[in-house]
Amino acid sequence: MKHGFARIAVGIPRVTVADCEKNVEEICRLIAQADEVQVDVLVLPELSLTGVTCGDLFFQSSLLQAAEGGLETIAAFTKGRRPVVAVGLPIRVGTHLFDCAAVMSDGKILGVVPKTARSAAQRPWFSDASGRFDFTFKGETVPFGTDLMFRCEAHPALTIGVEIGEDLEGIVPPSALYSRNGATVLLRLAADPAQIGQRDRFRSMIAGHSARCMAVYASANAGAGESTTDAVYFGHGIIAENGSVLLAGDESDGQVCYCDVDLEALEQARLRRPSFTLPGETEQGRAWTIPFSLPQASRELCRTVDPIPFLPKGDRENALTDILAIQAAGLQKRLEAANCQTAVIGVSGGLDSTLALLVTAKAFDQMDRPRTDILGVTMPGFGTTDKTYDNAIRLMDSLGVTRREISIEASVLQHFADIGHDPQVRDTTYQNAQARERTQILMDLANQTSGLVVGTGNLSESALGWSTYGGDHLSMYAVNVGVPKTVVCMMVEHLAMRGGYVSAVSAVLQEIARTPISPELLPPDASGNTPQRTEALIGPYALHDFFLYYVVHYGFSPGKIVLLAEIAFAGRFERVEIKKWLGLFYRRFFAQQFKRSCMPDGPQVGVISLSPRGGWQMPSDAPGDAWLREFGGLE
Image (tube, rainbow, N blue to C red):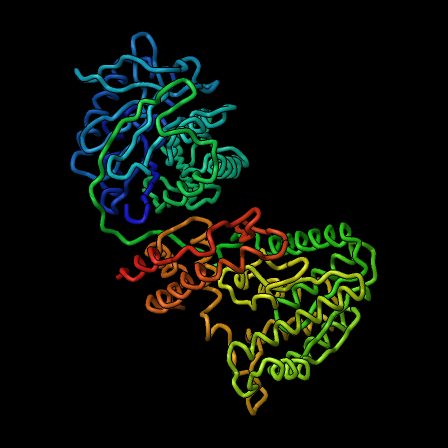
């Protein structure tokens, strides 16, 4: 289980009702299939050893004895094979018959979990179960009860809890208690008959339950082959991980469907939620935790990785709309609380100031205040290009804000003279002096107009420290501080096409979205183009935002982040590039914490905040040596 990944599978056998011998052959075929692809855990449907539609045949001794014999055969078949297998069958204990899941590994039955709540259709045959029972199978005592969990000895992150059918629909299902007490993989053996809308209902239910439990939830449903006397069954398997459906095989009869799940991500998420108890502890006492072993696996990762993890996959346009609404609501509250007469914003013609200006315009619209109370200031300097200057002017004019133009060249040259700096030496002093002069102008204008300086810096720049301390690092409210650079770009493009603006605004937004990212602090070349390209200096924002997400939100190791990036950016970035920029990310992230320790207020729009007040907290002097040493050891 390298990097915390486990391979989970659902198998849907072609059941022959009440013929355990044929069903054993089919189940063993699926186990062999799962073993070939190195599956760690395989879940099969409810009562799959007999068929769920046996009716009064469940009372026949011949069927029950055949089921027990079939279980013995299947357990023996798992000897020397990788998967831990959960199979459904009826088991008689004393004078009660239970709908059960038998969990087995490497030739041994680890334990049996009975169904706690039988369905209305099952009431003539099965009993509800609660607690533990004395159970002997083929002369050996086997753990039997509703509080069993199964834990991998070498990889405790793989801890399994099992429930059956309607157990999921209880107010507090068994899986909720399993997960609270350490189970990361929840298995459901199901037999849900086909009904209109049923698949979507269970899909959403399973996804939601996996999110509440911060767990993997794998459900295998009975399929074709069951009796159709009163119902029809379509075999389908679902695997969800912490709210996201990774696999949904709607027609899976006779197949094993699998995917790789990230158990380390679940553990990291649980570290941040105090509702999980110590492993093995339940509200009623200690759970019965049963160990099993797994051999080492050598397999390629079977998992897609989203290169844009900050946004949900399926509903990105709505997510972008929500971000804008959050930003505008935050700014509106600050403007009203501070009784500001104006909002002052530096407009460069770049992506960040463009988004900040759009947010400000939305906030003023919501307050029923004229956009002329927004003071947009363009401050051309030594590196300003005609293109960005023109875009800034067009944007402010088309939005109807009050425009000011204040050149910083003379004041910066005077400053150079004051401190004795040669303006031909175009070093950090040369560049940062321009950023600080612009900030001074904005702050003074805000004082002059009883206003507030709206910051433009984004989340990615905060992570990398890509700002001038005491310059663009400062503002009175930073509306973009929770938005990574890649999302800033997507928002500008989205608003250009679907923002509902007049054509003049849409046109300039499209032009700004196409402009290369640059601080424009060095003079343009002979063709009027800036010699500074931010991503050439510090690396692609696509990678840095990806790194930021997995470093801060999950705390993953450098090795795992490289692996995920290779999958996410296959065909776009090679491993050597990923390692190069990840090394730079770690160096800058640790070295620039002092800027984040005094960053201005701003709204958190996603799962990550670098604010020292309610988000990321770390000492400003912490070295990143341990991470860099591990990074240096990557192969």
